[in-house]
Image 1 (tube, one colour):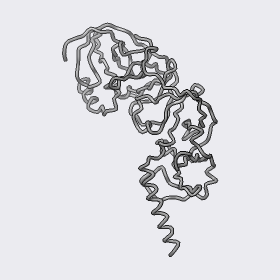
Image 2 (cartoon, chains in turn yellow, cyan):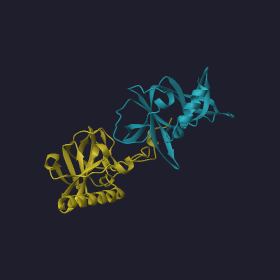
Image 3 (spheres, chains in turn green, blue):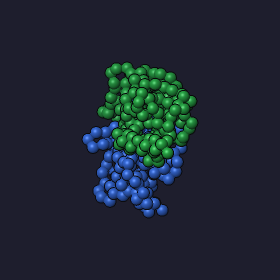
Image 4 (cartoon, helix red, strand yellow):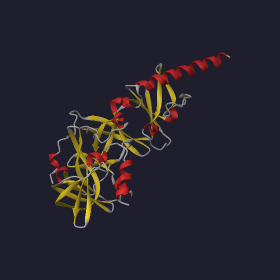
Length: 174
Length: 151
């Protein structure tokens, strides 16, 4: 037998420490870069969220208008294929027009490196995660904010939201 | 079947059956460390263990090989999985009693994830081809082959 130290696949490490927010979705602990999150709000404060009628992208049921931009509200349970639990918080993302429904924020943490997702993981998780962090003896996936909605999904949602808006305007006129 | 080849093998127990892996592919037998799990949809992968600062994916092959659920409190045999010219560590849950043997393997071609057969005493032991075993392909035909060979 050989000693594992001969392994050639090494975890790729980032050199710069990175602040992350640790949050839970259906009791699963996940992390997201703090700089990827613009705002954290309670779901109670989302009274102005509009329901959109569409079945194609099941993880999106609502939109939020912020600064003349339409944010699509993504249910993280549905996104990750977990059992649906009632979310309490919404993470408004900075880079894309998406807001993510989550259970709760655990805490902030600083990670000194990001391990590459092993190639064994070959499914949608390659889009979901930037990599894996090792925090307090726990392996935690660091989500890729851009992975919550693809450009193609944004296109379809924008088209459906626009159609809903037109229908609403027409109904108001009548 | 074709000619026999003498090599060193690690005998391992998965569920109630014994299998073999070429020892050149095996890194270590790890104790029952914590299995870290998170959402994903890769077949067979049950999580990650941490060994010597490295993250090692764990493939739960017990249901595939034995038709039974994996027992809890397992050891992990860490080997290498190849992806073209690259490779990475890969762990499979086993129970602790592994041993190193030198034996002649007779090559077999079916099921796909079995590369040979060892005769140890009265027992015939399948030599696993880890890359084929954990490849994300349906193993339905292989299972049927196995059922036919081992009624």
